[in-house]
Image (tube, rainbow, N blue to C red; front, side):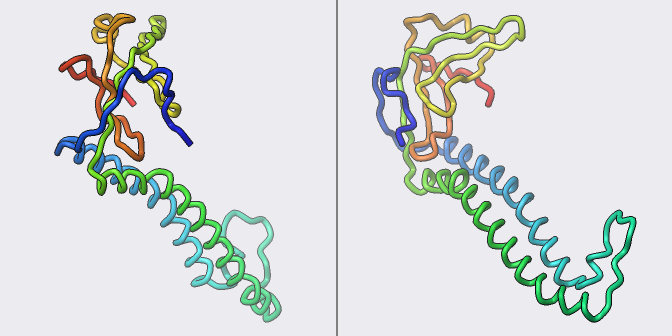
Length: 187
């Protein structure tokens, strides 16, 4: 799938990542990794808790009526629980693997390839002055608008050509420039 809107691009080229770009990508990768692990590891912990606690796990939590655990309940638990936990582990792992492939893997590929794209385009300005927010449209499908400050927004006219520096694979926005001036933006 093409992630760029070609009609908005006047020219583009590829360059090697600078040390600052590499640090930005590593920081983004670490942040995404922590976010993924903070969701995955507690779920894995719950699965181990179910197996370690055994049938007594059926009586945990706010329940009005407790289950009496006899030999039939224990045998049924040990027949069903392992399959349930394995099934949930597989579903959870597939889900988080899919998230990994969408978020962290492209950033890792960018770090290995050491390339970035410079895309030159003429932005369309979108002022929401009532909310004190100012946006520029970009040629990216997933990040079509970038929020910038008022002072930078006023410096840009319809004929200004901006340079958007993005990672080659993940399309992570590294920098937005107006000539040699770096425009500060918010994610």
